[in-house]
Image 1 (cartoon, rainbow, N blue to C red):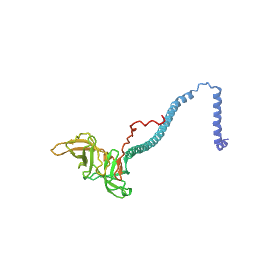
Image 2: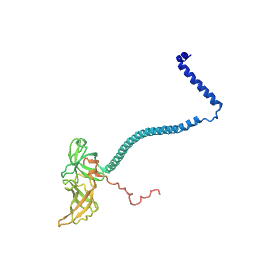
Image 3: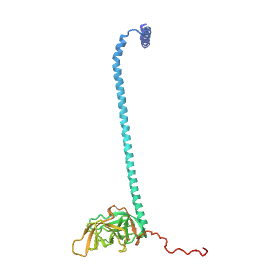
Length: 296
């Protein structure tokens, strides 16, 4: 018997545990309401551990969800920032396009107010030297029909004239250059003078008779007598008048109508142009009434 049990000890052990389990099941099923002190003690001991395990499990789960959410939020923030940068660039491009369209519409309206051959040009460079010259460069040249002496205009007034031209570019001498001179008239009184540039980049109205009425705020326009600029185009406004001295003339400081530093597009006149004359309506002729018909 002992030899049998030794050879089959695993089978015997298994059978013993099965028998004990069956006995426990049968014993507990007979009286379910029996006071199980060992069970209560085991439950009392295991309940805090189960609560702690459940809390730790929930906490770890919440932490993991939070970490995953942080990474997802970081990715979303990066994507949103990239989108915002893209929208900012698109907004800037749209605003620049609207501003350019507004300038071109203004230039087109000004062009339609002039009679003659005009060419639109883009400013591609300003004089950056520290010298006394005041010039800018445009993207049109002799290949487009531009010649030395052509007037350069903006909707606000005159800019200057071409003094050097190559095949595809031209240099413009601004009216603020000390070598520039424009024949002008005071719009209010029709007093004539010469608007010349100054060494400090401003303009002065010279050779105006001392007897002429010249006041701050007067608008100075082109006379059209210099053969370069069309008449009645604004040059600038008088900001100061100097009548000191005993000479025959008075001097006025003029603020140019055009800020050359802000120019991006200009009009170049190919030949002398003139403003369109306003249409004057023809009134009905006044005279004696027609003779009555012979049959009346």
